[in-house]
Amino acid sequence: MKFKTNLKLLTAGVIFSSFTFAGNQEVDIEDRACLDKGACPKILELAKVGSLKADKVSSKSLNKNIISTNTISITNKSKKGVTAIIAANNQGKKTSCGQYSLAGKATITVNVSCDVSASIYSLADSDGRSNEIDISPNPAPPLPPPRVNLYAFITSQSFSGNLNGIDGAQLKCQTAADAGIQQLRNRHWDAWISTTASDAISRLQAEKDIPYISPKRALLTPSLTELTDSGNLVTPINVDEHGAPAAAARDVWTNTAPNGFAASSTTGTTGCNDFSTDTDSRTALTGQREQTDTRWTAGGPLICSTPLPLYCFEKLNP
Image (cartoon, rainbow, N blue to C red; front, side):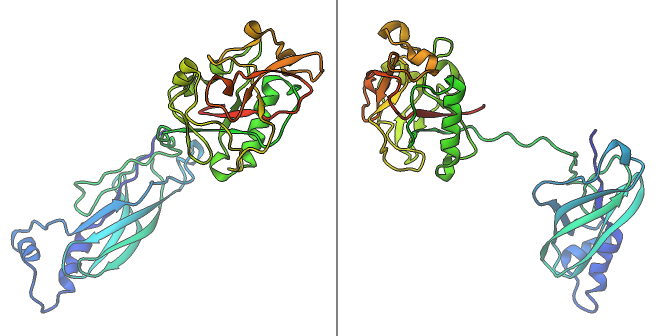
């Protein structure tokens, strides 16, 4: 349900008060025209500041008082002091909301709370001709701007090949990021690993055309599309979640070929039984963190009991 509040600067009281204050002083040309022709110019302007809010609005409160609180900017265009009276126009019934004094050519910003009970309001300036603003309760938040780049890092901690599968590896990346530097926190993360049921690149399709950078803001790749086409990074993924140079092992669990797909079928590795075991009889493909050619993800197999870090790539959504 949409609510619209009609807040008005009461015209008569406001404009004529500007001449009362003038006393014996010379009247401005704009004010003289108002007096002579009976057509007062718009002396006061009313504008919202930030988002408008409709508080305590629900289906149960439609027949009760509704408190509408807004931050309003009032500008006096006249050279004379004025008194601005703000009211809500509720289906022809005016409800006083506040009275404010303004010096000549002044602007003030005030928080105005009106106790009104209608379902339709509007916000207008002193002459009622402009600045109408709709107030919707619980408005949808604005869409965030598109991301210019995403982050990728190597974990400072090492793990055996028993990662508890994809879910366990993702959790390890999320935990590391949330404990890392500020710009990595409160984001979504995935591990660059592949299993027989899930390829690394297939889980990053929404991000495939966005550049990736390190926590130090070095460009890693212009896009995942370019990375998986060429197999080459611009700079190595060798900065951890704390923004420090990687101190963990040289090799990194991936089980992922340069094209982003699972490597088991082409390398003869088992992928540590889809990263669910750490026995010495199983292996998985690993990458090398200091490399920018295809070895960054496909350097060679290692046994699953070896403790190694993970590559973590930011995702737009969980």
